[in-house]
Image (cartoon, rainbow, N blue to C red; front, side):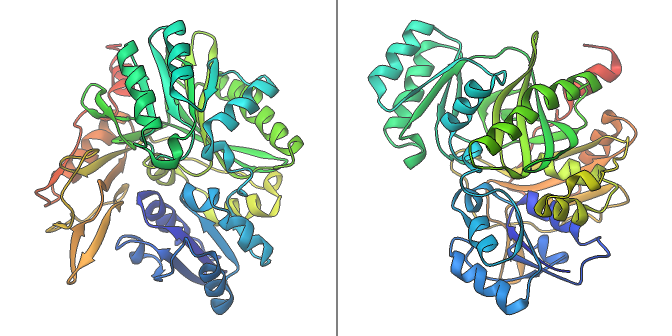
Amino acid sequence: MKVLLIGSGGREHALAWKLAQSPLMSEFYAAPGNPGVGEHAVLVPVNIEDHEAVSAFCRDKAIDFVVVGPEAPLVAGLADRLRADGLAVFGPSAAAAQLEGSKGFTKDICARYGIPTGAYQRFNNAPKAKAYIRAQGAPIVVKADGLAAGKGVTVAMTLDEALDAVDDCFEGAFGAAGAEVVVEAYLDGEEASFFCLCDGKHALPLATAQDHKRVGEGDTGVNTGGMGAYSPAPVMTAEMVERTMKEIIEPTMRGMAESGHPFSGVFFAGLMITKKGPELIEYNVRFGDPECQVLMMRLKSDLLPLLLATANGTLDQVSAEWSDDPALTVVMASKGYPGAYEKNTPILSLPDAGEGEKVFHAGTGLKDGALVATGGRVLNVTASDRTVAEAKDRAYALLDRVKWENGFCRRDIGWRAIDRETGSE
């Protein structure tokens, strides 16, 4: 098969690494990719925002299958365009991608189909949003409705924080994403990420993970796109997975089909496990980043047939096999992230990874032939072992051999799971 992968982050490096292992692959391209992705695929300088250019490349190379990694091209309708050209595509239509593209759309689907989530209201002006917040009190959650690169959510512990977050949205801090605001109830519990392939009619549960959103150790500081993750998430017991499928995934799949937007791709459900059980915080319509890195490390099956079955509507005919060993990834970010940071700082060398280890490139580039950090989140140092504690030790031992002066990381990734393992919780 001739495959094109769309995207350039750590998630795409993990997908490329796994896809490249498939015996079904004959030619593999990535647009635009990154130096890590380039280890596995031919990088092509196609502008992924130019759907005609992507389509022309697919025609030119007789591409059989396109895997869309990030959310922005999906929300912008790239999958629709390529399907209209007769291509098999992994990723939802623009209409179905509203599950991530609009927080309000997702909340309305939850309300319509009885999916457990926090109570909410939608607002298109600041005074009404603020009046509602004052009536509800804190803690409370304020979200920019649209895509804000993981930064449009404020979990406000005080009224002032919540009111400031409303101002941020309506004053343009998140661009067009903040033109509408969703204010929702604060859910108390433990967060988990649940991944499930869906072809519109059938669903195949994949695996669970837990992300670390806050920039500082002990889950302190501002929210980021994610500073590390591990899989599986111990809070997601077999019973909790079963309830998530029955109470959240299946009604969503049914609701999307009934709404005329059948969902084909990966459901990434951000969950809060409360005293009531699993409740939906949000949907993403692509693999998580950095969760994808630990999922791919644990997946024993060939990824390509799973994604193809999703695209072709035959998910009921495949299954996924997973390693019992947990995997853990630590994000190395540029100093200053998630605020302003210096770009193009030199990464002098990366360590050789052993079996069960991998350094994924997230925000890297080549400048005059040398590796540089181009993004906020730059490397995902990943390892698996028999326990989360052992996987953590391996990941940090690998990370400590990275030679990059401008990098920083959290040193406590996996702490919840390790507390459970050691019985100190």
